[in-house]
Image (cartoon, rainbow, N blue to C red):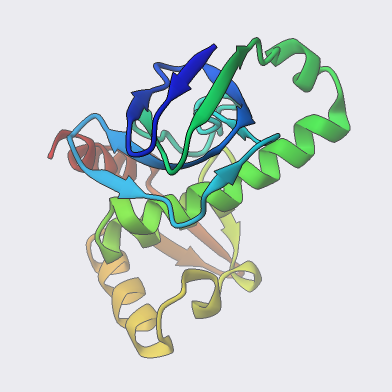
Length: 187
């Protein structure tokens, strides 16, 4: 049990906690020192932990993240074992959790990368393990940017050979993309 007073902070250190009493907000602290504040608060009965690293996405590596909680009122956190096999062996839970993590990761990527890195990371999420994406799956609305920004950036990525188009597919240079995205983890 961890007891926190209002405004007191605590690092989760890779563990998961049930909020037994109180209310907290969280911050994601990246290995490069960047801090991403989360706008929603978590209340009694909710779980707090680093879900980004719980289920790995083959298509994208998310940098190491430490979670800091800050109590908004007197709070009690109770640590519990979040069993990976229990979730992964239940296909429905695994798929649900995977989709929620993917959705959160996309918002997280917008904070982590510049527009070029964000677009490359999202393209990687859409691609299969070989970097192949059907063209019909990609349009500017998938990236939360304007149509003109999308096409300018997409053209630039083609010129820089991060991707190429052939017939009805887009092919990503996954090695080049991974090298580029890794630079952001080091900043």
